[in-house]
Length: 417
View 1: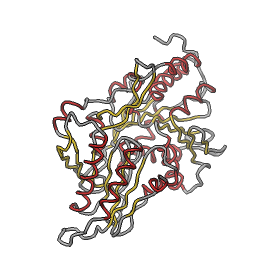
View 2 (view 1 turned 90 degrees about the vertical axis):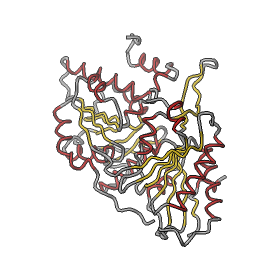
View 3 (view 1 turned 60 degrees about the vertical axis):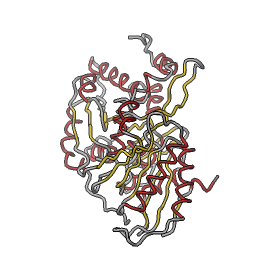
View 4 (view 1 turned 90 degrees about the horizontal axis):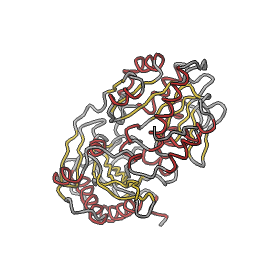
């Protein structure tokens, strides 16, 4: 089983040069908005540079002096990988000026000024220090995912601001909410009618193709795993150079797809009549939350000359992480989602169709540096009949036991109101 976590490199694409991030043009406007307002909503497509650049802009503007800029992520993989990326950009060792904290792993020091962490870690800090006195700015990232902890933090930070508004002389905490796709008007209204800063994202078109390989009745993992492998292989043999990102539901399905794709790619007789002859091999890389950190780093490395990279990932690559060089998306149409089962009284992971907004998020991973393509393995009928418009927030589909107990610990006794 060990071999499955390693990259699958078949016999034998050149890496694409990174383009300037869209957020660079809006630096002064963003810093000014944070200085002048207690709450700011920043919205922009994934890949615009919000997560890595905005904390650095605020640090350079002086927000990190004697205090910490905290950035929350719903997923531990994103918190770790983004902290590594920002520490490299700032030229400092990880754990000094830039650090991260996830469950069971604290890579920070007394010098840490930019701290990436899971939203659960910040919630636990509030239990010990309700005013978050160590922080000058809290950035709630990936707010559109509406994770349980992020939703609770919205309410707690708003309550904290209202307390300071009524006579607390302590330096006010700044709160920035960042999202790729969110109903910004509603959020702005909830956060004291705060300003909304929009960052334009993708500039290259993405062609969306319905492959009609699965319909409303095809819900078995064996069916959609087989079809995504078939489409990925077809892209590899027939499309020009550019990396592939495949979306699947979980570790088991990803490793199965890696095995099958590796076997089939090894047996390819690369034709000489294909227009693009630069692609002679395939580097297959799995990506899921429980992978060791050093193996996750390989995802971000450019492939060798003549090799096409194919990343097979869970939904983590749709929002939290940006992989450069992706030109082709293969969308299975499914995701693993936590839902409460009232019959057994437990939260269970279920494979369900993604929402239409999630599908657009996935397509948006292509076309960062050139025109891209998104191959949806499902039919248009599946899109219309099975996929909801928006993802149901976690707070509406999971057990609220832990939420109520957390609020009680924080002194919020009238939970209903």
